[in-house]
Image (tube, rainbow over all chains, first blue to last red; front, side, top):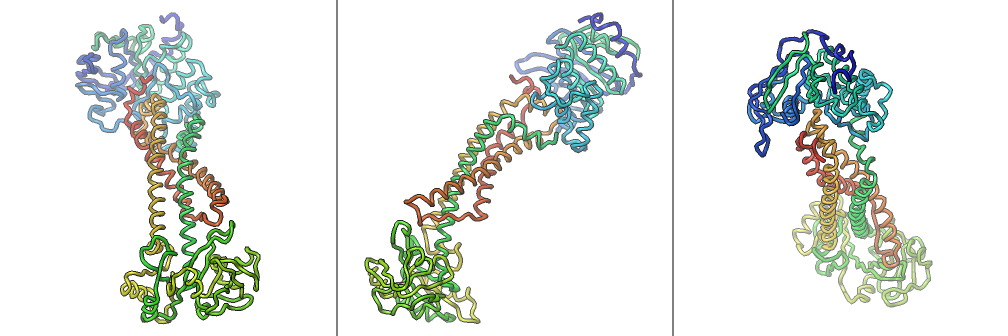
Length: 246
Length: 372
């Protein structure tokens, strides 16, 4: 997918909306991730992402992009090195559930919505265990769906939505607990150009609301829409390109 | 969507499986509750026999296989009567006999006419039999009504024809559904001269019943005192074995039910691996995941308990009306039966779902998300 297919206005949707703060919100130091069987996914990787930054992680398949995202989301741990997110050293945290719920929002390539409950309920379920009661959770889920332009579809099942709409529900779900960081793993990988454009537009709006966005993509054109593109090859960051001034 | 609704939605989504599992729990509950109410009915019948005499306590032979096998001889009766604090000690011989198909265990009580008042008997029609008569009897008003007999009728029992001299009332349904005979006559019919089955004791005013009981239990270790249904096991070993069988079958039902529930819930967890992985990935705690599975199990247990109680009621009523069991099997639905249903059902579902719940909670989110 090239930038041209997304339309000429796409870059303006995500670029230059609000200054990047310099305080690092994500910091990986000398991180090594080796899977069972000896496969080296990340090789002494260092990465710093500032607050409100929109960073695209790009690279070929199998280079370690998703592994990197999983480490930041506390879905996996490094073999060695340090992963600091919002000042928490994830390698030393015992209960990662609270961190996953409050600090990061996750968007998967295949959206991972629960098929047998409504779209609204899909957004609500991540808010269980927060201070919100049933009514407040319901209200917030409705507001979030409105924010992603799906206000009238809350009662539908995910199977009754298009791929792009499902992905927008997944973004609403990821933002439900007001995380400071939104992590997206190939969020447009299965979408057509128009749907991908709307997702990128949404990320731009999220970022301008003060959320740090980290998006993994193998699509260079999409990556160029972020503030910065870090390219990974063979488990190491080989280049870091600032796409436009913040 | 409230958390509870979310937790219960899987039961609705998999209706067939949920119903199957609830049915398995219900059958186990039905078995346990039916046994319990039958056993309770037997205990109630036994307790009713000792309550006929309206005594402070009853004395029986210790450790007999069943209460009516108890034998107390004249020497022991004399020692009971000599115990300080005893106001009256009424010795009765209790036997059962099949009168007809509707009365397979008809109760016959041998008692001296001069002790009827102490035994709480009131003559409502006719008169008392003579102390040494060999072919006379009295009928409780229920028995007379059920058998269609009245004063002057002939009543065939103990292999002889007896003239009904009177109709009595004890205020106790078991006592009123029985017949009374002169004690020597019924001892003779059963070839147990001088023997009684039970002694019904009243304590003199000013004496503590428990102290008098202690004294008898201490001085006559071959006998035992019974005041409540729960003390029945001291005399009636069959009831003890029956209680043990009920407890054993409850434990067995819980174990078998737990295995069935565990298998099904484990299958359900396998099927929902991706979903559970996602929930962990978006920040659900392990405790919340365990809660999700246990709520489902508790709901199944409650449904199973309700169906099981209904089935048990239907089955035990049906058993009571079987020709072979009419008049023998009495069921007694007490609040305890409902508690038993509840803890059996909840026990098997909670124990059974514990391992699946822990397995679900310990899923590694990333691995679960890539589960096919």
